[in-house]
Length: 424
Image (cartoon, rainbow, N blue to C red):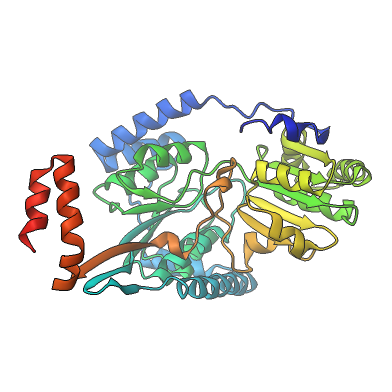
């Protein structure tokens, strides 16, 4: 990420700065993934099977989860876990349906006889990558599969690592996946991009993963669509003097336990709050069972910045463009309206990132690494195409043909000029 402007830098005081260098050895990852993608493309299932053995110690005879295995995974769910999963599915479905209702077809006559429009067309086949990771994130398949089904995608396939928790298979099934495959990593992305004897090629791949999955998505983009390139999770809080150090520290550590590379931070106008939060994080780490993950994340990637005024706080937050951005100010709704760059915004103390991560209905697949400067997160609109069309009556031809003919002639494109003139 680029450094803030010199003017902005003068208006901030860094109470805690990240210790880790954000740069990683991308060259090694890139070369490894390039080899995996090429092998899967040329060898199909044989390469997938070889890499599954090498990376996941998997000797599965068949990649696809059978109907019997799907039913068994659902039956094995603790009843309350199933109810909670279905609650999350309903909340995500309800919000996706409401979002889809805002994406309307269009038909307009912009000049007499000139009819323009667009259709909203679901992407036919979508591949959802469901990460295994440190924890069985039961909401992960919900976030990628449910909006696809709401959008009307004809087929949604899910790939998840062969060692993923059985509850993740149940989550894929309950969310509506048409087919589920026990294939993870870069080989899963390559298989969905090019197709193998067992795994169908898809039109778009969605879902987060590790650095190898991310790099594989980057390399196959063009052959298929992708949602985004996602890095480690991020949470920042913007707060004034009304912020509560204990609550902010709790929220930062909740996200930090995802991964040692999680980026967490506080941007505030109040130095006392900054110092109290710093102390509170250290205190809470002493009792947090996941401190072995959250501690290194805080040490290496934690940040606390004190800003000279609200304008500087807003500017620095927009510079960071955090994946998850909490607003803990005296008037959080007013502050929220001034913010522009974030993956998802959590307005007021009652809006915890955890609610969105798990079950409230907004999607938790969000832009990281400052990508929120130019894109939002995964949503039902990610699964449809807006495709334009036009049709003309004689009056419309009379209006557009003459300038099209003249422009074609000016450009020296005689074929274009003839095609435009033919219809006069």
